[in-house]
Image (tube, rainbow, N blue to C red):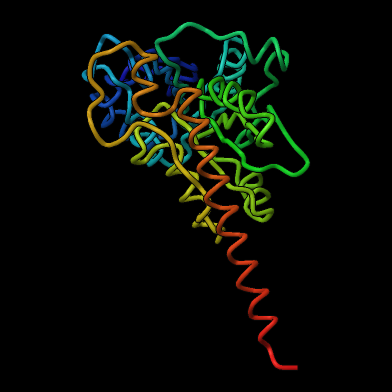
Amino acid sequence: MDMMAGMAKTGLKPYFAVYSTFLQRAFDQAFQEVALQGHPVKLCLDRAGCVGGDGAVHQGFCDISLLAVLPQAALVAPIDESSLRECMLFMNDYDEGLSAVRYPRDNVSMLAEERFGPAPPFRLGEARPLIQHENPSVAVLAYGTSAIHAIEAADELSEQYRTEVYDARFAKPVDISLLRRLIQSGTPIITVEDHGLAGGFGSQVIEACNREGLDASKIIRLGMPERWILQGSRDEQLAEIGIDSMGIQRAIRHAVDQYSSKAAAAADTQVKMDTNTPV
């Protein structure tokens, strides 16, 4: 990390490939030598999230929470190969500070590219809509490859719920315009990430809403819980923590049932109050 900072100081644009779990050992240098000096070092974080057989020692569960505290840091994640290319191009042009892209130890899915076409360019703090509806039942904001599972979940439940799916793209800065629109329309929001819930993408969403004075009460966060995820295949681990397609389906049902019930109860209470109001 120190060497990357020195190269950046000379005008180069260095890319540093490192396992997400080993980034923690270089956090001091990322803070002091890179971010504090304003150097545009680009981090490529491999093995982000659940890593299957490598076990807990290699789980990349804290890179967002570590890097999000650094001013001017830009944190991105791809959902497939064309998306990764656009991530790298964005980072190449981002000179305001440190940037980082995270990606898992997994096979590349072709689902998004076959269905929606090649990924468009990344624009700072903008999510990419994948599935949209005129009057959505719920919106899923998925960071990184979790968007693939969100698409599958939305497809499975398409006859029951109008589920919007967004490729969040940025954990910092998050798409506050999208959040404002969804919250003002009363749409429940589910955030999904292959990262720890503490300080992760969902936490960045909640904090952004707090800064903007937005009501975050209808936001449900899915991610890695605050416990160690031990041995198993990556698919088994994603299922265990509820961020595979089935887990997202359960969250969609819960969000719609919970908030539609609250809305109905509130409307019923209002009707009773109106009925009992003296003329």
